[in-house]
Image (tube, rainbow, N blue to C red; front, side, top):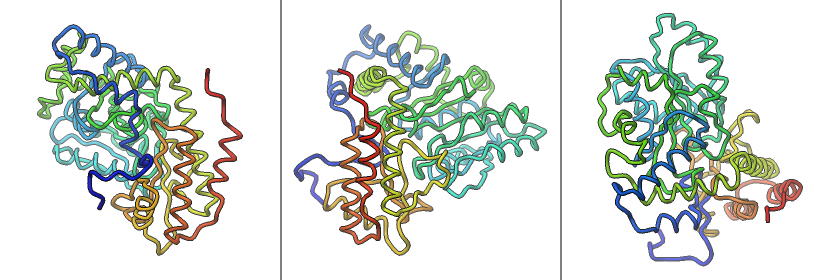
Length: 398
C-alpha cells in the first residue's frame, strides 16, 4: 500500500461510479469561510439550494436536504411513511437494492423481495401482477433503484408507475436515484414518484455528506399517520423551517456552498445537455468494451446505464487482480464487483465532471491494463470509442 503522503506524477484517475471527481470550482466553493447558519446570508443560501434541487428532481413538491450519506435518505423515506409491520415490495436489481432491503428489515418492515439476476432492471409486469393480487392492499410501498450502481442497469420508473396505476393500487412509489440524479433524465412529478432519494457524491459532483428526499403530497399525507419512530429524519421538523432557508439542526454549511456551485454548473450546461453528454459517453464506453470482445453485465441495451458500465471478466480471470494492475501501473481506480459479482466484474464510472478527454484517458488505462494483466481481449477498443466520439462531438460554446 502506498503511504498517504506519496504522490505519483500526474492526476489520479478516479473512475469508480462514485464518489466522483469533484470539480475545482466546487472545491473552491467548499473552501469558503463558514458562516453563521442562523444569519441572513445562510438563509439566502438555503433557499437557493432547496429551489435548485427542485429543478434537478423536476418537481414542484418539497425537497429535504440532510447532512448524511445516501443511506440516510433510504431510512428517511421509510421512517416518514411506514408503520411497524408494514409490507413493502422491493425489486432485487443489485447490491444497492439489497442494502435498501436490509435497512427496511432492520426497521421491522416486512419486505417482499422480487428476485432478480442482477443483469436486468425492475420488472414492471411482475410488480403489476403482484399488486393486482394484493386485493387487501397489504403492500404499502414499492421501492425501486433507478440506476443500480453495482450493475450498470437502469429501471424504467415510468413503467413501474404505470403498473401500479393499472393495478389500481394505493402503494407509494419510492425510487433511489443516488447514482442517476443529475446524470440520467429523471422526472419526479411526471413519473408520479412519491419519495425520491438521492446523494451528493455522484452526478451532483460533491463529496459524500448530503442526502435528499423529494416528497409528493401523497407521501406527505402518509407521514401524518406513519408510526415508525423518527427524530433526526423527521420531515415535519425540516418542512417547518425550510421555507426561510434554515434547518432545525446544524447544517453542513460548506457542503451547501459546494452544492450551490454544482447547481450553477449543471444549469449553465443545461440539464438536457448533461443527460445527452452522459448518454454519449456511455455509448462510447460500450463500443470500446464490445471491440475488446468483453461482455457487459447489463443484458438489455435499453437498460444500459449512461452513468457507468459494468464489464464481465473472461472465465478464470480475476477482476480484482486486473483492477490492482491498473491502479499500480496507471494510477487509475476502477469500481470493484460487489457481493454476488465480487471479483467477476469491474466497473467504469463515466459520470459527473467528465468530458471526452477524460473518457479517452480512462479507456486507454483499461486497454493498457488488460494487456498488462494478461486478460484475453482484442485490441482496438480505444479506437472504437475515439471514432464514435469524433463523429459525434460538438463545439463547446464560446
